[in-house]
Image (cartoon, rainbow, N blue to C red):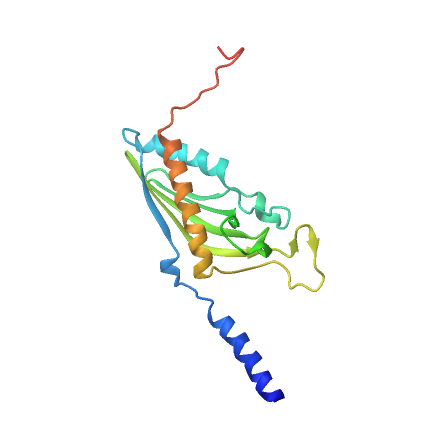
Length: 186
C-alpha cells in the first residue's frame, strides 16, 4: 500500500513538472513596426534615444546589482539607423495568479531599426530575473538572485506589455516636441 501511495505522489509531482513549456528563443521575440509619418530618420533616432532613457533602466532591482546604473543604450549607429538597448520591466502580475513573483522582472534586449517615417522595434533575449529578496525579506537559505528562461505562459503575459511599449514609442515619435520656454513659461 505504501509503495502505491508513493508511486501516486511521485507521478503527480512529475506530471506537474511536465506541464511547464518553454518556447525556442526564436519564438520568444516581440516585433512591431511603428509608423511616424513625415518624421525624418534623424529625428526618430534622437527621440528614440530620449524615450529609451526615460522609459527603461538596466534593472528594476537596481539596488541589487552594481551595474544597474549603466545606460540602457548599449549600441548606436546613426548612419545605419540602429539602436540597441538592454532593459528590464517588472513581471506583469495583474493578469496572473503568480503572486509569489512579486519583484521579479523580465530582462530583454531592445533593437530599433530606424527609417524615414517608421521604426521596427524588436524585443528579444527575454529572461526572467528572480531576486533573492521577496517583499523586502532576504531568505538565508535561498540560492541567490538568478535568471531563467521564460516559460511559454510567462511569455504570453509579457508579450502584450512589449507591444504596448512599442505603441508608446510610436506615440512619442509623432508627438510635438515640448521645448523649454524659459523664464515665466511664456
